[in-house]
Image 1 (spheres, rainbow, N blue to C red):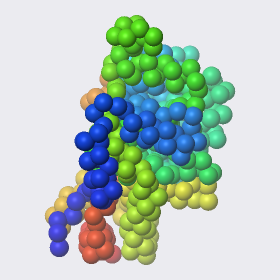
Image 2 (cartoon, rainbow, N blue to C red):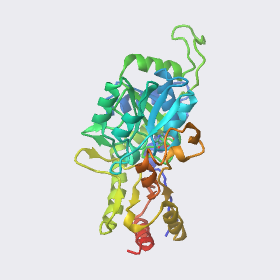
Image 3 (cartoon, rainbow, N blue to C red):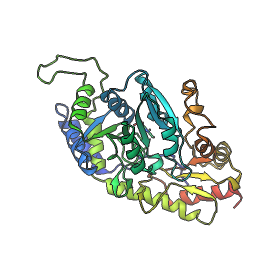
Image 4 (cartoon, rainbow, N blue to C red):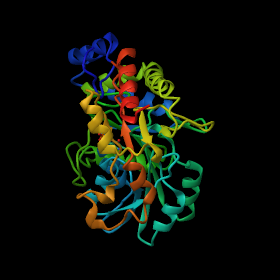
Length: 369
Ligand SMILES: Cc1ncc(COP(=O)(O)O)c(C=O)c1O
């Protein structure tokens, strides 16, 4: 059996042909960027999309565009990838960590409300592992307190909440095309917006704060977050295969779930009547009855040549964020608890049936099941 890869894209002749066309014809225009942005926005029922060099930059760009500044507080989930919170710190604003739910691994509304202060300006909700938070509740809460709601849908391409696609919620949504993601450009991201003014501001900031009317005349010094036509050509070609890509991700998820279905007390990515999950990667929380921690599971699986990844650490626990004192095991108990019992399984498109069975046997082995 070939070594099991944690992640890997699904690239076909269609992508190779499109990238090759860009190589021959695409150096003096942004046609692939424009096409990709237009169709990606349409698919999400958003008015506008702006491609960025990565999703982290898309998050920073929207914070900049909304005027988030030094001393402002932005509520983010305690458990997410650092990229949700890091751009808040680029603005010298303060990331405030709210707890997540055991069931959906996403923001807990009560915890969010408790963390709102006079300095709070925005909430960034994360669709962790394709799960969806209580978007109705978050939307109401943001409205009640006059806060911006931003949706970090980096892990949720193809997910839906009550039939609405991930990326459509709040003032803006973001997606990631990192090399490990469902749709990839190696590195890449997209910012989705409906509001005309916010879009114009974000577009202006993305390209050096140039004047629209006077060439090479800059009005503001800004970070430059322009996309490339090369990466957009790959992204656009992948996007034309979006349904096929999501179907494969879901098939991998269902294969894992079915083979482990008889083991009690395991929680997988969520699927309910209200939530359709794009399942970028299958994650697994070992129930307490298994007495299995994250590091122990990763180590034991590695001994069987099975790669796995840790569930995200609580951000307030990490050296990067500890000093903000804006979350703890006491206030965010669910996040600390889940994080210590969770792992992510291999999600490469290249996984074979034999490899999935091998991984599931390994999980049975370490759980003595
Ligand atoms: C929840 C979340 N937010 C943001 C990002 C940032 O994406 P990128 O790596 O494209 O900057 C990622 C992914 O890596 C992510 O998982």
